[in-house]
Length: 196
Image (cartoon, rainbow, N blue to C red; front, top):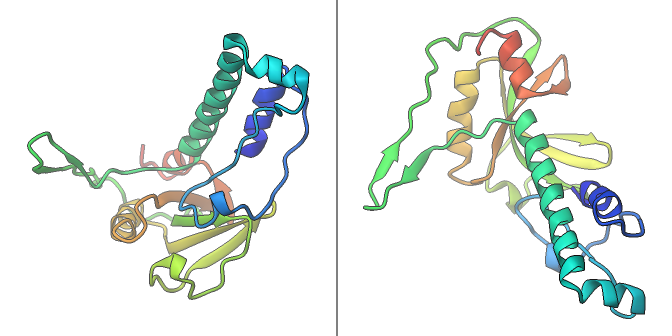
């Protein structure tokens, strides 16, 4: 996410690229979702202060942050599957949303579905309270980011059930797919297994 914001600052806002740095900042500590701290500029620099004080500068910076968020959201949604468990109606009654799983059968395509529960730049020890009591968590280090998964099945309908249970403890958990051990977009996995 931070790299996407930095790219937008450079291309959309025309700001100097100071790179992306990682640090154990208190404001980001224990975030339950991807989180970054954005520095839009430095008021100790007269040129940047002047830019940040204009409506134009604020608008361009805000636009760059929005575009980065949009791009990140699109990237995540392309590779993930969020299935709502329920929605709240205005009268506070719950309306269940059913998922059609009639055509979701097991296949032997090398595709495995898992539920991603966490990602972190720092390794999370097994048995950590961040896993909310879930056992048998799989850790994968991908490009310096530790990702944590629960469950493994070649049945899409089964992984949706797993996701529903996991979301009772970790509400932002989502389904991802792997082919022969390599992460692939969920749309591709569904297409290759004839589930689309």
